[in-house]
Length: 307
Image (cartoon, rainbow, N blue to C red; front, side, top):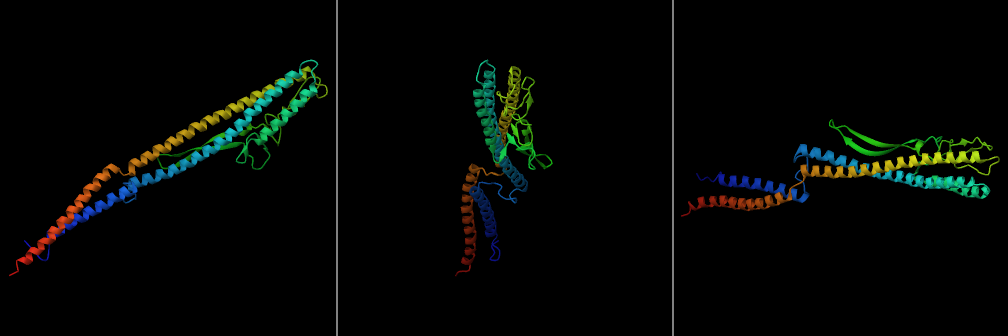
């Protein structure tokens, strides 16, 4: 039936064209943004997961920065410690030389004094970002022996998050402590020889009154003990460096994996969208043509009334 009030063919063609145009807009938006799920209305579940994981990746990026800062602090302390170890080794050698009969101990002491000054300089210079793990003052109100380096950000199944840290006890690395004599280089020892002197690595004096071979031997043993303690501290710092490097690599790989996972959820497949775009453009052209034909059919009714 032909009607001048209702053009069913035109209505059908128009609905089809409108649906094609809506699909074309979606495809063009995906090609423009690169996302199949750009807003919550596209897919609420995927959008929520992707948004949360992007936030977590931002937190992990901060963890990477924290690990870099921590690595710098540990590296400065380690570098200074290994240099100080070399200097203490030289002091030990000078003490051994002072045991030789007839040697001029005053000249040896002069050399030792320079090495002792160097140890102080090394320790005070081992500072990064306002923190010094080798030269401290444990009596200061702001002093905290436990230094924490953020190493991870974790989200568990129930949605809660946590931050874990690497803890460094600088009581085990400090060389000098201004509050007492608990540092490796200012801890004291009293010899039992003729001199019976109280010494530390930074204050020992082979020219002190009454110092004899027994005192010198005990000084050598004491300095070697300190040397071994410093070596252990350097080893611990080296272990922290390795742990931080490994964790930094893991966090970087984890961030890449999360990015890939987000992409699987929300990224548009450009090959697929390109193919769909071409198909929809053809459908749009055909829809326009069909609507034109449907509208033209109404013109034939008028021809029936022409004389």
